[in-house]
Length: 475
Image 1 (cartoon, rainbow, N blue to C red):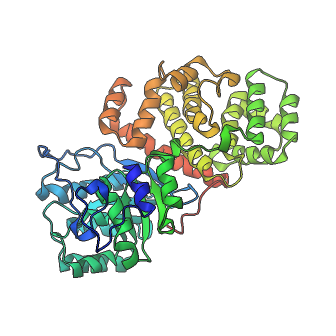
Image 2 (cartoon, one colour; image 1 turned 90 degrees about the horizontal axis):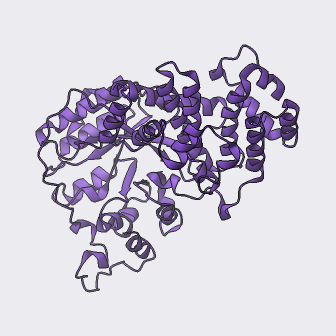
Image 3 (tube, rainbow, N blue to C red; image 1 turned 60 degrees about the vertical axis):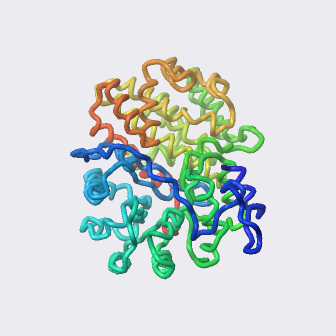
């Protein structure tokens, strides 16, 4: 699909009105009004559960790869719900988001929430924070967009609510050309899904929509690789892309050429000194070589979230008040923030902080403080290979981490491996895996859900207090 996409963006797949029609869709995108959507999967409809359990919330980034929003959806069961039950499903989704108290998260981020076009009359929409939520409107099979839906959109927009949709999901049978223009002009974002078939991916870019609605901003969804991201950022029409969602951040090279930044090398050296019980003066001497690193560390340590009775001013004070293990833990943040204007590194930091805090809370639930500390380190270092563009175990060898941490991060085994796997399943919204791992850890699913959201909010607070936060006002 990517080759087709690149070729299409380069103009090689464009069709001219006088050219012969291509015999197969892979030879070029069909015009927008003849997009052929894949038939819905023939699955047995499922009964709606009493609760949706774990609602996935995955990061959405801006062009600088800074996390500015989250995409909320339920992966399991979404496609095999009877049409008559879709509104009930959406009501349950909105109620679950209320119960999760996502309003805390939306103090720092925006939210894309997926609902059906037929759920515009749900009164819970009016209870969502205007300006912070963008509803992604999804069509139902056989649905026709009617005038009353446009009136509902107008009423909700007057309340400050905003909307997005995937143009390729709306075929010609769902709405007339006139209604199509009216509907598309009402949305704030248009969605391009990289996980869809190539025809659906290419058509919105290569056909009429960008010319017809030049003011629309685009969300590239399910961007899987750094190569896909590069197409969005550098291909024809790249200025239309404002936001990006998908696992590409963990496949991108944070550092060009695989070279570790000088400041990161110094942080790694300080962390080695702490692990080898070096004299505090030796540790402080390393910070004196770079006063900016010391400033950033003290800003982390003195964050209100730590609840220190007084601010610490030196490394010696920090070691005295917090100890080597805690200082080591917070030094890991500097690995992600030592490079200037590196949105990818900050995105990896946020993901690492969420994993670390979530795993720490899982360990702390049963009262084992040391285990909780080591679980934090496991989450914090789980993306270090991506950040430093060096493979495991090379990047971890000099740090002399506890064996339990190393086994989970490097080999994917050991007593901490299920905790790390659960954190990663939560990121991906993999409900079956979440449920299976929660059973392995003998952990209540609802509590795990709450812990994960708490970790997401906690990470935002840490970044804000440490002045490593992102501007979401443009979303």
